[in-house]
Amino acid sequence: MTRRLRFLAMALTAMALVGCAGAAEAPNPFDGGSAAARSIRISVVNNNFNEATLRAVSRTERRLGIVPGNGRETFTLAWPTVDDLRIRIDVLAGDDILTNRVSVGPGDTVYLTVANPLYRSFLRR
Image (cartoon, one colour):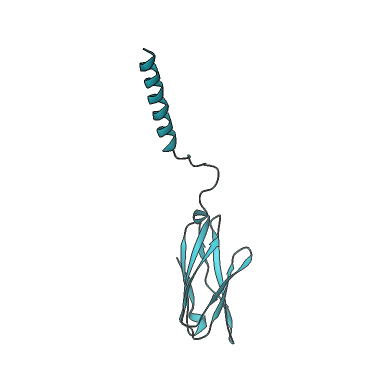
């Protein structure tokens, strides 16, 4: 009888260990999701011959980075809420321009085309 009880106890312990090892931690509904869900992506195609320095303009202005002439880049920007976005394009040895306004929210991707001439540049969702 004790042999059966010992076997049963060991079997139950083994099943409990296997069950706990496969359990995944439940997501916290209050943490706001992943970083990717609280940011936006800005995909840029620079059709201009000169390099362009880009800044995101909303309630504040934040530097995104530089895109070489006739180059492509993708930037990720923390963006926790739905808001309007404009991009300030500053071309090396040239003018600067502020794009049209686009409403974006977390998880969105926007596409910026830097044109030649610069005033034809546009931002779209």
